[in-house]
Structures are given as structure tokens and as C-alpha cells.
Length: 210
Image 1 (cartoon, helix red, strand yellow):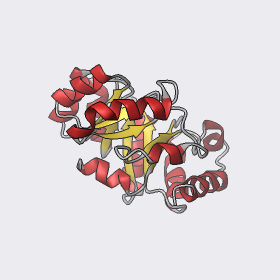
Image 2: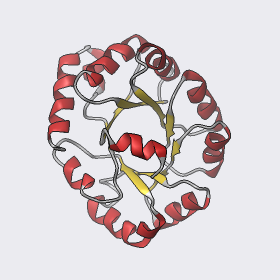
Image 3: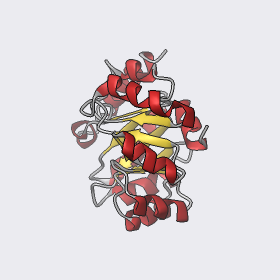
């Protein structure tokens, strides 16, 4: 199994986080870690993303922190420099994939069709993000796709529309090693610094995976 996929499989849950204030990154990381989740993906959709990744990489080294929504080679370079241990994209762009490979950043490109999976595999990508998971056909769609690609040993991280109620169904698919989800760390919770609720949601989600 891909080394990154193997690491994330031990957590099963990858909170997807949008941070507008980098000062809140470390407390958030602690809230996740202390409640059983040792990984997180910070999206590069805000100006504070790189600073937040760096703060966690340096202040909470036991947290496996990734950078999400990487859409350009420049963002890949920034994420790597900030200390991200892996990168994620919502779609499949060969230019971005190659930038990640050139910068030795483990990378999970997004796919939602058989054609995109084929192109990703042709570039050596065997750990893929199925996105937007629910909108792209849900569990039924991914099962159908895996019927055609199971022999390639591809591994999948579904993201998009996943929550505490349905994450268990996704994880029953053999190729799924972890699921990304934004409900754990909603922006309102981060803004209000409601770490207690973040912790409660983390425990609730993980309890459904036992």
C-alpha cells in the first residue's frame, strides 16, 4: 500500500479545514489530537493556509498535516516549504501532479470518472481522492468504478458530502482507506474557538468506525 495511504488508514478520518486565522491552527490541532485524530488537511483557499500548516508542523509535530485544494505548482511548492506532509487536490491536473512528484510531496489528486482514474494511474498515482463523493454518485458509483480498477491496487479517500452518519458505509469499500470531511471543523466552530465541540464531533465520528 502507498505509504501515505497506509498512514491515513490508521486514522480513517481526515478532517478538512479552512483556516482564516493562523493563530487558531495549533489549538485546533490539539483539539483533534487529544480526541483521537492525528491527521488533518488544511485547504489552500485562504491567505492563512501556509502559515497555519507551518504553525502545526512546528508546534504540533505529532500531527500529520496536509495541504488541500492545491491547484497550481506554486501552491505545491508553498505547501512543501510550509511543512505539509502530503498534498491533496479536488481534481486531476498532470502539471500539478508532476510538481508534487518533483518536490517529493506525497500527493492525492482528485478523480470522479474512470478516465481520470486511468490518467492518474498512468502518472503513478495510486492513492486518489474521490470527489465530490456524494454528488458524484456516492457509494454505489465508487463500488462500480472499483469493479474496473480493483486489480490496480488503487486506494481511495472519498471527500464531499461525507458525515458522521454515512462515513461507515464508505469505509466498508475495500479500497477506501480514509474519508475526508469538513463537518468536524466547521468554520463557525473555528471562528468561535469552540474546541470542545470539535472534540465532541471527532469522538462521535471515530466511535462510528469501531
